[in-house]
Each structure stands twice: as structure tokens, then as C-alpha cells.
Amino acid sequence: MKTHFLRITVCLLLQAAVWLPTFSQTQHLLPADQEIPLEYGAERLGKRTDAAMQKFRDNRLGAFIHWGLYAIPGGEWKGKVYPGAAEWLKSWAEVPANEWMELMKQWNPQNFDAKAWARMARKMGVKYVKITTKHHEGFCLWPSQYSEYTVAQTPYKKDILGELVKAYNDEGIDVHFYFSVMDWSHPDYRYDIRSEEDEAAFRRFLEFTDNQLKELASRYPTVKDFWFDGTWDASIKKNGWWTAHVEKMLKEMLPGVTVNSRLRADDYGKRHFDSNGHLMGDYESGYERRLPDPVKDLKVTRWDWEACMTVPENQWGYHKDWSLSYVKTPLEVLERIVHAVSMGGNMVVNFGPQPDGDFRREEKELAAFIGRWMDKYGECIYGCDYAGWEKQDWGYYTRKGDDVYMVVFNPPYSGRLVVKTPPETVLQEAVLTNGGGKVKVTETARHEYNVDMPARNPGEPFVIKLKVGKTTGGTDKYREALT
Ligand code: H76
Image (tube, rainbow, N blue to C red; front, side):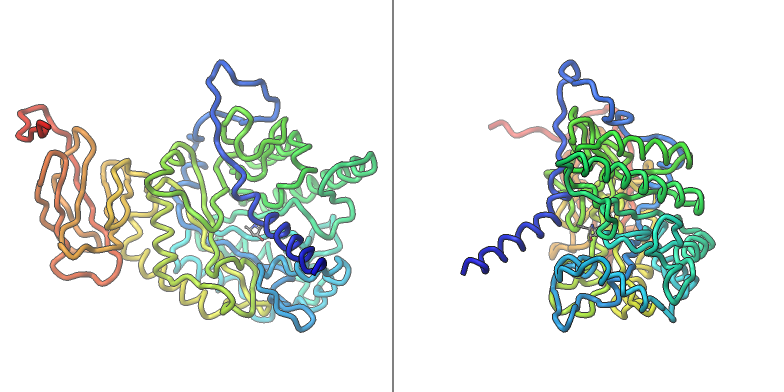
């Protein structure tokens, strides 16, 4: 009974370790005159306005690649299948690092074809791909001179990361690097600093990490972004200076590079948002497998953010058994993409390639489905932003300059799509994108309209582009009720 209780507690703690980092950040803005001085707080107030950041933002749709040794066992260790995230198997099954690294002998992805991956990404319509250069396990997808656990020490030998960077860039796709600071195979990693010995070891570890990051930045100078993970431990919170240093170092080496908020901790160990409530890094990266509420959480439209999601409930690396949790349908994935863009965010859809270097059937089908839709309707995604209009039940708005898009996911039985425009804004015209022609607009009240459903229901989420004008004074035929 006792051991059972203990096991449950340990399991809960491990799970907490997984979700804590994504739920702990909040923004608490202090009145300007009450702000405290910080040496390692936000670099800047408000959104970045340079071209590189605008490109990051305009891309809107990305893919995540989680690929490492964990793909080989695929969630199963010594005959037992673990339902938790496959890339955490080392932790679930409590495998010591040296035993885990034996998997390197089996790293030989004979079907790996970087060009085929890049074609698949282009056809899916993603504008960038985030690749796990090193996940928590510590195995490097590039031949790092600072580690013995790299692709170079496997039967496959080749620089997987280098091949991918080239192949994606050749297809016009930006590459972003995922990098886990927490490293389960490095003897100097510490979860907390409790002694001088810890202090010395962790200092060596941070130097090692700096070296790996500098190596990545100089070997692959076209990288556009570093997405840090595994930064939630007390050891890192006690070394907020180092996270500010990394941000600065990378930005000096690679002008324009973007860095996620998850890297950062300030002088007091406050993460994502500093002690004065200002976002650190260039964009918020806390929306992992969840999204802000499209009505209640509009505060997120004030800063840049990027969400990422798994296709099963929580599997990033390859897991051989997807029947253990709910798997989102391609339509559900699409809706999350639109949901994110409608609130001014990016969405990154995860893929966990198989150990042989190919993608599982479900992922290929998903990529093809999203790609077909993006091909027809992508103009409401790329370069689009939060429209600022009141959310309606039929779906989501996005906006590009003066054009407002209605992305219709839930067509109503009435056949009328309600649109409420902000003050001084009038609806002039509604046109189906993808060559569908005009649909009728009827003014029903002040700043309220019915937009007709297309004569033939497209049978898939579709997009109506709205032409919008400004009211020019004149008399108002509507009167408020006297009550
Ligand atoms: C916890 C955790 C990690 N963060 C996600 C993006 C995956 O990499 C997961 O293993």
C-alpha cells in the first residue's frame, strides 16, 4: 500500500514536471512607477518590429520534428509499453544514461531522405520547421565536438541536422532549432544548486552548453530561431543571468535570430515574463498542447506568441502505439492552426519520425490534408493577424491589412453568418476566396450583418474575405431601445 502510494506520488510529481513549465508563466504588470530594477529582465518593451521578426510572424504555420534515440524503443522498454510521452521513456523506465546511450548502436535510419522531408513540409504549407537538435536525453543530431553522444558516433555517421537545414532551406523553408538545456546524460547537469560542488559542476555545464550553442550557430548560420526547452529547474532559475547572456550571445552571432520566452529567467528566477510583467525573449512559448481562449484571453494579442501541439494527446517523439490516447483528426488540427492565427499567434504541428527515417502513415496523411487546405485557403493564414472583431460562433476572423477573413468552421442552420463590426466600420462586400464569387450581405442592425452561406456548402472549412469601409458621419437610422 505504502509503495503504491509512493509510486503514485512520484508519478504525479513527474507529470507535474512535465506540465509545470507550460502553466507557470503569467503576466503581472506593475504600474510603471512601481517597477523594480532588473539586470536580466526583458530586453525590450512591446513587440519586435524588425524584418526578421516580421518574417517569423508572417510564417504563421510551422512543423516540429522530434527525432532522437527515443524513436528506436518507441515507448517500449524491456517488454513494457509506457503510455507517457515517448521522448521521456528514459525517465519513465528509469534507464541509466549509459544504458540509454547503447541505443546509439541502433541509430541507422536507412529510409531517411532529407529532401523528401523538405518536400513533404513544403506541400503541407509550413513556412518553417523546428528541429530537435538535442532533446533531454542528450543525443545530438549534429556531430558536436563537445559530446560523445552524437550522430557521428552511430552506424549512420552522417550529420542529420546539416542535411535537414540544407534540404529545408532549398525548399524555401526556415529552420528553427529546438534545444534542451536540461541534459540527462551530462554528469555536470544539476536540477538544483545545493553545494559548492553543484555550483562548480553547473558552471562547467553552462560553459558546455554555451559551446554547443556557439557550435550550432556557427555551423548552421541560416538558422532563424532558437527554441529552448528544459529550462524550468531551480538550477537555471538561480542563474537567470545566464539565460540573458545566451539570448545576447546568439543575437550577436546571428543578427535577426529569434529566441523563445521559455529560455529566460530574470534576476529573481521569474520565467517567461520578468518580475515587472514584461515578456522576455521575442515571443511567448507557453502554449503547449493548449490555446488561449478566443474570447477571454485577448491579452495575448499584445505580444508575439507561438503555440505547439502534438497529434496524439501527448506524444512528441515516435511512439509505436497511438491507440493509447486520443489522436486529433486533421480537421481538428486545422482548427487549432486557425484558432492560433486568429489570436495573433503561430502554430507548430509536431511530427515524430520513425526510427527508420520515414514518417508514420497518419502523419503523412495529416500533412497532405493540411497542405491541400492551405493551398486553397492559405491567404487567411500567412501574413495574417488578430482582426480585433468580436468572435462569432461560426468560426474565426483573421486579418491582413484592410482585408478581414472569416474562416467558417461551424456553418449555422439559418444559413446566415452573423458579423458584428467595430464602431465606424461598415461591411461593403463579402467574397468567397478560392474563386467562389460574392455572397450576399444584409445589414440587420447598427454594425451588424448577415453574410449568406455560399449557395453550395463547400463541405469543408471555407473562407470569406470581407471588404470593409469607414462610416462617414451621416444620419444613423438605428435607435437604442428606451428601457
Ligand atoms: C516537457 C516537455 C517537452 N517539451 C515539449 C515541446 C516536448 O519536447 C516535451 O518532451
